[in-house]
Length: 355
Ligand SMILES: [Zn+2]
Image (cartoon, rainbow, N blue to C red):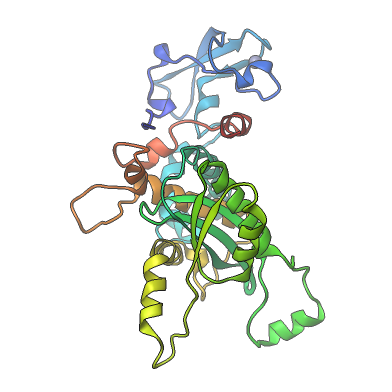
């Protein structure tokens, strides 16, 4: 069971013990137990002068640090903005609207959304360490970067029964569609489009899923040729039982039985894509809030996935307070944003834990 922890700032100063050295260069950065640091005074911040922040000196490298180095709001001048911004980013608000609502600069929202996305990607990696014991639905979510002419795919792997988001993987630019003037202009100045973007992201996603499925993987997908190719290539490592449901033609007089079977099998991933499109401003098809960088779009998608897995209830109408993580048996209750950002996640330590 993976229970939420009390936020670092809320812990009593006299009881706080640094779990490891916060400096990446120090040999004690990856320490698990028996880390030694000595108490080295305290200081008070101008914005909260009633609380003393303890300082420590690492017994391995001799450098000093404070308790704030272990908080998600490290080095922030306005740490109180972190949680409201996370909440508003998954509530359909764009950066400028969030800035107006919270009374800060739009650039502050952009900068903090990068930090939130980085933390969410690490938390998603950590939460995906447990084994997979259900069929996983794989599909690509199509979104945009900079304009509607530049399409960006995100491979999404979702548990068919739990609706837990297991993995997200960027798929480079997808082929341009449409006949607009802008597209004709782009044809003369073609952007470098990775020809195998969907295949590569499918391979990476399947590798992540296979690491967690020692007995083989039950995969459900539509009939995109890249999924079959990826399964053929990775089936030599571990057995993959692949169920394919073709996207049927939905014109009048179509075969409703096949359409219903496909919708039932891929419901978990279709629902995730609907929620993504509905809950994040930059994923809408008609907007001026498109993400500017692929990495930022992926970070915000990870933030959404953490919210979906740990905070959002599977049904907001029914009285059962159940999240996808609770369906998996990962936690015993829904988390809050404060618990999601309770402590800073260090890149090297997450990589060591996940490996
Ligand atoms: Zn150190």
